[in-house]
Image 1 (cartoon, one colour):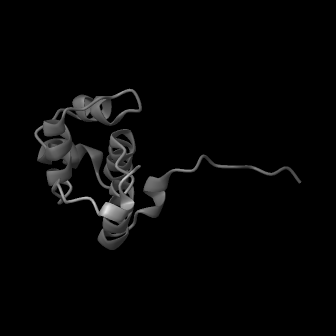
Image 2 (cartoon, rainbow, N blue to C red):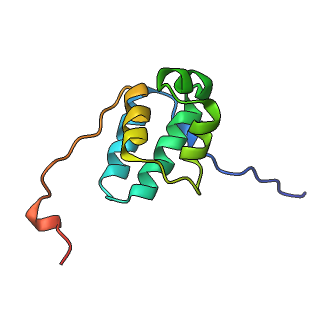
Length: 101
């Protein structure tokens, strides 16, 4: 019997708002901009990408480009995408114990 595998796509597991919120919060803890953009791409795929493009006032192609692995979206674009997904980007103080040395 030959094993078959499917490519893992996180978007397939983001099935409700609670999971999406927990996922984005966990990613935000990493303080990695590229990881944050990748997570937004996962959430965008989990929801309707065409509707997200309309809600964010971005073209669908622009949205794909911004959220691609080679994309380098501006803060304004990330903020628009987050807003269209029902989130906002906030800045919070870093806990002294968790600061890098």
